[in-house]
Image 1: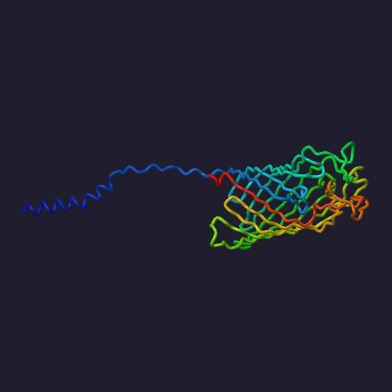
Image 2: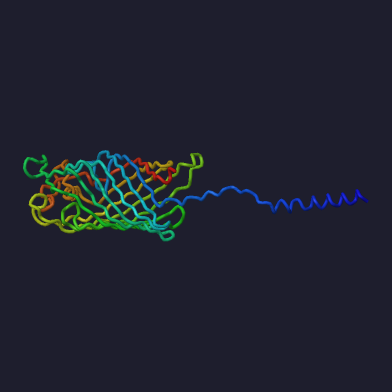
Length: 314
């Protein structure tokens, strides 16, 4: 009988042990709060190209150019970003500036598949020289303004139609195109298609095709007695480009064909190209000598760029 009682007591003690253990305080791990992501970020990058073409017109005398940019960003929310930046490019233009420096700022709101970009940009060409006055004379007689700095406001929209396919629209406006006092409005449409991955290559390698068609509406340039002896209606023109690009991590190699519908004589009237050659049809005000510029010719461009953000590096 005594053995039976002891057995029952032992069994009850064993059954109660887990319950007692559950009631005992347990020292837990200290929870470390997760820091909220910073709303600040910085984008930066650099590139090199065999020809710096801006809206169909060479800014580097059909020669090579390098550029770089620095762009701080502040994300008010996941769908609304403020940004400001500075970009610089090497150029070879008629007024022989030491560089092109762009200051810009704007906002980037997104609404589902629609991304917008609204902003302001100032194009600064430091250390320009005016040709056609004093001892500054080009052999072909090209004349220039003293200052071609100008600013624009712009709006851009991109819509992601499907995962690989997107379309876009852009518009830029300036009240004084290249300092001529002529209104300039540039509008374009774009398209981009990301091609399927090539299975035999690294998963980090991608490729896409893209293109743009744009038109520049330009009004009347003011007479200055040098570049324009009388008010002159600057020629409107269309431009287009299409290309194939390859991406690898932060690098992009863009191979692109670009062209305009400008004549060589109209090209000189817009650029004052110091390397323009004679023999063309004269334009009474903008190019009476009929000089022909190749800065608006069909051209093939190869551009290698690297683009990073501090957030992606963390």
